[in-house]
Image (cartoon, rainbow, N blue to C red; front, side, top):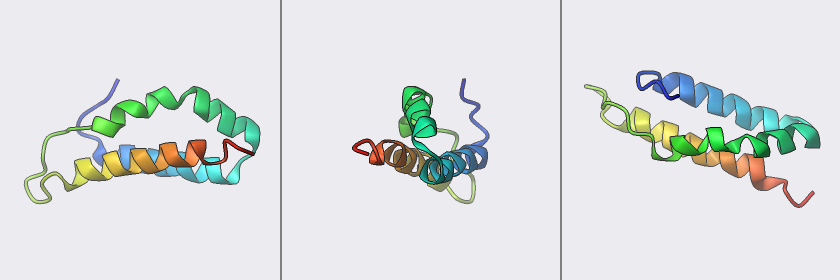
Length: 78
């Protein structure tokens, strides 16, 4: 379940996953591939626009989700 007011938390969590996938072993990467469906709804994340930053925070979540999925499936040929 997505909570709409936590854009920065989503970005931080996705960056952590991306970092951990890059530094961990094959078992962790496979496990993240099995659970990648949890990240996919963030591809189309649309929260309330910030009064000062507009849609920039929501776009950061979407972009980071794409980067995270790319990192999860990058070493698939190993």
